[in-house]
Length: 119
Image 1 (cartoon, one colour):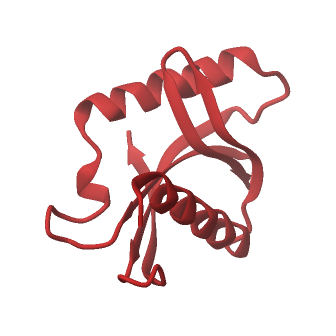
Image 2 (cartoon, one colour):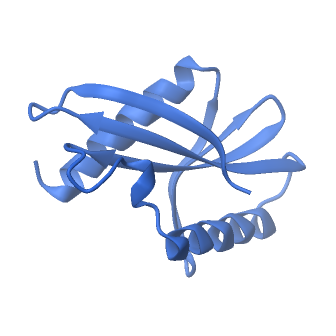
Image 3 (tube, one colour):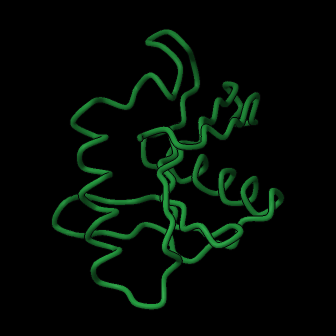
């Protein structure tokens, strides 16, 4: 599976997973000068910026371990840009990760939500 295809598959699985957990998806693949946010969702009056990480093997660590300090900084900057450029948003917000692991055939073996991944 190519990298883009892997990422797209992970994001689709993450969206479906979040919807089942009661999240309302507001937007996907928000891009700005600072970076990109995979999924912007809302749950119970909280805006949630979601970074999806998808892997097919744990050879180089788990999906959540692949988020670098620089990526965290970009996520925060992108979230702030979104907050400053949109109106009628909930006051509270957070950044979550969704870790997706796939087998060699592209079937999910693990999908896990990590709330408040960056505080």
